[in-house]
Amino acid sequence: MSPAAAARYLQILGFVSILLAALFALAVRADPTGANDLFFHIASAGDAGLDGIATPEARLALAIAGGIFAGFSGFIVFVVAPEIAKGNARAARGALWALATWFVIDSAASVLGGNAQNAALNLALLAAYALPLVLVKFDQPA
Image (cartoon, rainbow, N blue to C red; front, side):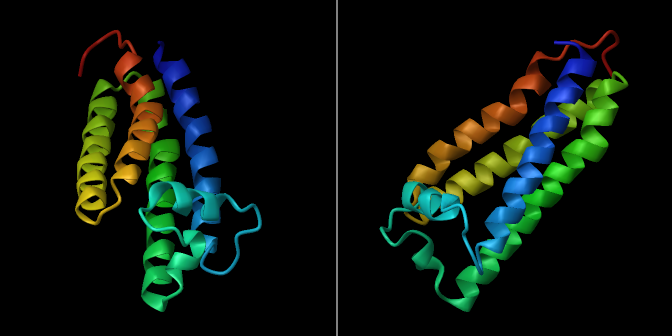
């Protein structure tokens, strides 16, 4: 995969992720699509879905998680992808390390919290973001 193609893929995925992250965070008040309720039914060991975040503390965690995911996605769009397009292999390696850090912490905490299903879902997100970072071919290694 060329650096330009990898960067384009990451920018598209990043913009879609920013939108999804905003919808995720806004579920503290409304879930017009029902996607968040579905996510919580799939990713959680409980059966309450979105109703399971009824406490102010749980809503705060949801808002923070959505904001962090949006910020991470913005970083991919506005920093990592442009650097990859320029042929910066170091940016791709750094993004892979960041993804690995997120994956290990999020998945381990999910398993420890009794929500191993989320760790399985994390694999799909990891693959979506890591694929272009692994497949990109740079002219000069950094």
